[in-house]
Length: 344
Image (cartoon, rainbow, N blue to C red; front, side, top):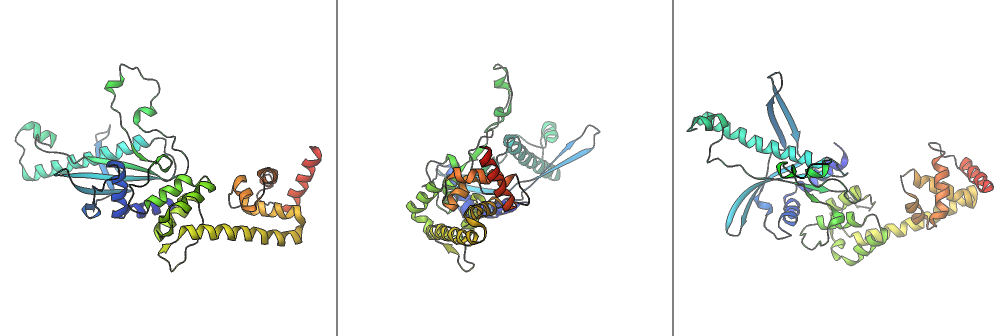
């Protein structure tokens, strides 16, 4: 299991965050599902079937998070099973994946009901006996929510029919469709319905691609001055930020930490520039800095921003350095740039 998978499961398994997430997707932010009315369920889904050789085949899948929710709303009480599937990357077959989880959850309910009837010997007719399910038996509804924790726009399918090729329009009414319940940060238009710090996580993910927008969000939302440690760790992992977290702190002022990081980055860049400049000269100094940041998988735009240089200055150095990996010999990169300059 990857670090992102582990972090997402642990983070959203918290009942307060889980309830907040569900309320925003299912009830438009109204506080209907309460943390104290959530109960953990086994995330293992097992379904058995007969293979072509008449032998039993067992299929097992592990959900990310699965909870039993008791809901009291509009004077009535309901029970529903809610699963959350976390996606740090876009999954282009997610309708099939989620549909399979739901079918297995319903199949397990039928199997457990049939087992109880066999034990109690209380089926009234041969039809009920063969079904393992009576006319009075009811299934508990299953809802699966997909939480996309990437910073890109979601361009994957949102329903099963999105994965079809050309289909005769007359056949469409006869083909069952399956729609996913997707939460994608870039598509959230109103964050005010969130009551926990998942709001800050989703706001950062929505704006992580643009440093200026990120700065604006941090400055304008006072909630970022008081963010719990787990959320800051999740933000660092999923948004790719590098906000310092003091081991002794449980609450972090992200606005302050972000500003300090920017100032330290500028000073570090200047200090590295002065030191490298004395050793390699002004041109080789920039090459060395670009190489260091390239090895950290930073883009041309990010490097230009860090070094406070124009992208057109960084781009040729970046391309020349890429051609010299994995050694990234600064002198050879410098010679290649000089050669390209003469050819130009």
